[in-house]
Length: 498
Image 1 (tube, one colour):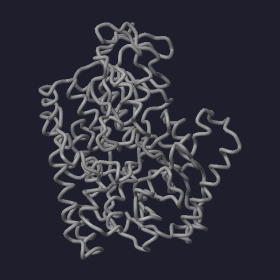
Image 2 (spheres, rainbow, N blue to C red; image 1 turned 90 degrees about the vertical axis):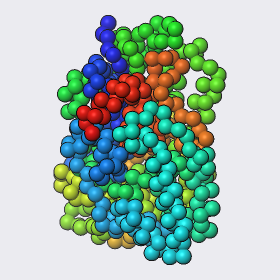
Image 3 (spheres, rainbow, N blue to C red; image 1 turned 120 degrees about the horizontal axis):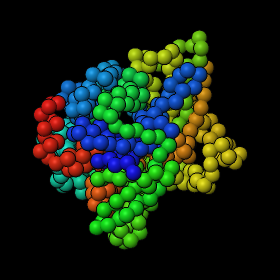
Image 4 (spheres, rainbow, N blue to C red; image 1 turned 180 degrees about the vertical axis):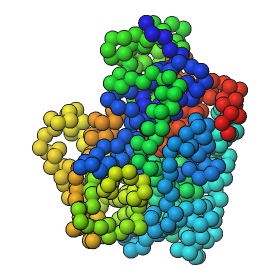
């Protein structure tokens, strides 16, 4: 029977981060992944030689002193991953169709504040106060500064008030509220449901420095693969745990894998969905309160994605744009409501030319989607789904085209659509139980599954544990990892790297 210090389950950005952190501390680590490849939603696919991202498209935090820059420096990876910043404000646009107005997002807090004040001169005070509040939350959240080496960050008053209520207190201008809450599309929760604190933690880095990454999600995967090899991490794909065996004194003695192999380990970190964690736990090892807590978690929104390329011989009619968000309604509460029946929002993502190493530019066009949209086909399998499902996908692609071409008719003769994916596609390829884009919905007052579990050598991390996105998922692993390693040992790693 093989023996490891730690097993890490799931090779998304959180699992990669946790595996590297633990192995850098001299531990023998096994990283297992249910899919045939590592990377989770960082993974890309290609059509006709053109690469497309699935879950990861852009991020913040790469600037000097930014949280992502510090994390990568901790792992000696900062020079291995190349950000491509959106320096031109026109590259990132919010279009509010009902009002007939669009807004550009520059890089930098001061630049963004000044730009927004120019759009809403009578609301300058509200805009200034909003950004002060966002920055204040993040300054008082120690986990967003890994140099502080704080194990358990405190909750803030802003954790118990919604984004929507804060914005309504600040301004009566519905369009300004829409602009300030537009990035809710990047974490999939209605402004009335998400705390102002978590909104601030997730989007401050976007205001500071929005960037794509050279070779997209593969840029992260390749860098981690090289570092994991350097630290001799055992990586196995097509592998998952089927049984927690020999449970004594609330500790797992053996971990049984799907191939029948049995593994011993001092601890196991599960970076998978909370519902999948719950399935692994023996029933007598958790309380009813714990079960109720997990069952109350709701899925965040999912994405319906259409993928297109610029036709041969054609040029991009809007070459300066990289991210264009189309909002048919000023109120994000409506657009992110599963019961909403109007025209869906649309986000068009075109990575700058310098991001891709191959010829051809892939364009991802995503709409919000919800589990109810595909509920009738949840139990079907890829390649065996009925004609009704295929008709559903085609109808959504047709709707995307109509919406996009209505706003930008120049694309009608420029784009060739090459593929599409529903929430079931994400479920199949990313081993997600429901195909949601951001794990569980980060609702106001919710206590996520993070850290030690009912079995004391099991730990939970991942985007559902803390916050979604690259930064949130990596931070969850740092918080849990430094609790496992101890503050003093983690501090030594910080001193060596930062």
